[in-house]
Image (cartoon, rainbow, N blue to C red; front, side, top):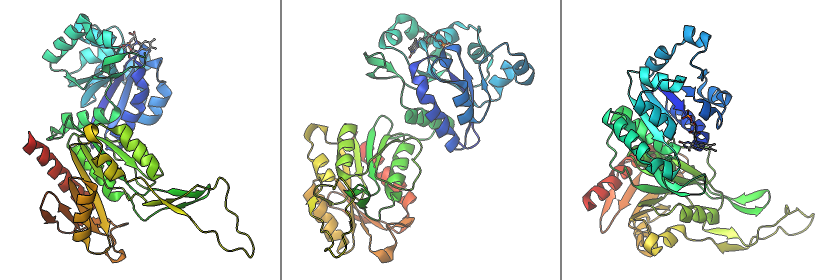
Length: 402
Ligand SMILES: Cc1cc2nc3c(=O)[nH]c(=O)nc-3n(C[C@H](O)[C@H](O)[C@H](O)COP(=O)(O)O)c2cc1C
């Protein structure tokens, strides 16, 4: 979204509280955001917070003389590549459909010569009302693009259609709007695990491993780029959250399993995290003290849950395609093939993580993709390219199955 300018009109719905995340993501991707806030919108999010995040003035008032001389409503509507109304209330959809121009947001929308995207958010009855449905039809017929809404729990306690899509999906929609990129995984959901787990010994010490999370994070980003709603469940890393993904931070293997099960159902699961096989039995509640002359404490280890195997055997909620990772230091292909059979996953990505390969912390990876009866040796490439190639293979798998 490098260089793209979004005029973001925030109207009065509870989902306005998610808009700071959208602004952050657009800016991370190189775009700029200028906000117009309705009177309703101001009840849910402050101009100051939107101004701080967009690093620009927030416009609220049609009749502000200084704004009219410096930045009139016409210029505001022309200075953008796209106008996006998010959340779009029932009220602003009605105004736009009727051609009303009685506040800054509706006037800007009427005065624009730029494309308009609406991201509706409202109670199920408001969405299903014949008036709203007629307004949506009118706007679609005039070329307005809609992102969502979706079905789900509502802030008012009801359930149904009308919930705003998550910020990650708004970003997906914007990307598709700007670049008309192929989105073969649109409508699918992927869970990706990444990074190490930290298994506590006492409140200050833990057992970890050398996983950087680079490969898992790159896979999440690549799936998201193909239009897939992607939930990234990650252990502690130094990496930025990939834009467009829902990111859940965990520390232990138990937390990773719980987050994975909570994120189901999914079409795709890629388990790239380096989950600790063992944890200490019974984390000490206080820091274990060094005692002069005493023998060092010994750690009693117990097995951690096997996330790959548990999800592979999860019956009705099993994702259609499960991809495991096998990080090996010897007999890579034999060990990985055995792991695929033992864990009952569909594919295994096997890689050699011996220290001399530099795989764990480096930017490159040499992998083998083991599928049903076939082994592909991929050349050494960046982790980003491994991720893109794997995401492409996953997309192809679903296209072929249709
Ligand atoms: C707590 C609360 C939550 C609301 N949430 C929504 C909502 O999600 N969607 C919607 O269309 N209207 C919602 N409304 C009603 C709008 O805020 C109201 O129609 C307002 O006039 C919209 O003005 P605007 O479109 O100019 O921002 C809500 C009102 C309240 C008091």
